[in-house]
Length: 300
Image (cartoon, rainbow, N blue to C red):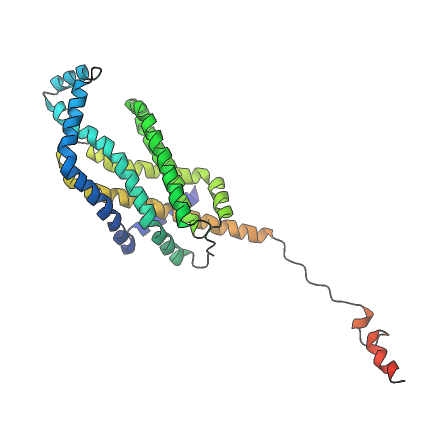
């Protein structure tokens, strides 16, 4: 874990690099603009639809009525925005991660390689379309896992464990691949992801908890909920910085592990033995070999 911690501190320092900050603005413009536009046109309608659905559902309506009574009517005004936020947050989080993977990770890998690993050979074991398929496949699996696990979120311990586990697995799948795709061969990448599975997954877990932090701010108070449409770009930028930090963390750890792996392979290959010097009579001057034939031919 010492390598994980060393990569953590390096990633934290690199996150403040002006190039990383500048790159983080592009996902904010795309995801934040999209989210703000949808919230501008559909926020009130979505909140009203959630309230009506909850109040008309036979199994939930009595609990809704009781919670509204004991809260003095406040619960009804909060539950609609809260449910919409809880549904939208995972989608925004996944969208931010995919945008970081598409628009930032390549530049981040080149930045780290140029400053820390300038002599590390690039073997291009993963192409852009392979990375895209890998990311889309992992995202679909994560979305299915989220939907299937939602009933267990009602249990407080599992609510704190399951979402970060899913985010951690998705970050591990997507970002470790992207961090190694340019420098490692396919064989090297597969071996590294197998041998370093648990350190890489632990990085993903921590990233999952960091990614959940902005969502907790959304749900922390009823005062912020009506302001969500205006604050969406800010929260998208926070998600983007979290995943930019994760990309830096994976890159520092992955490239360092790749460098160590290559050094071990190079040390394990035995040096080729020197060619022995020939001692045949033909190569020795003065011997009775072919070198003396011209003298015989001259009659000496």
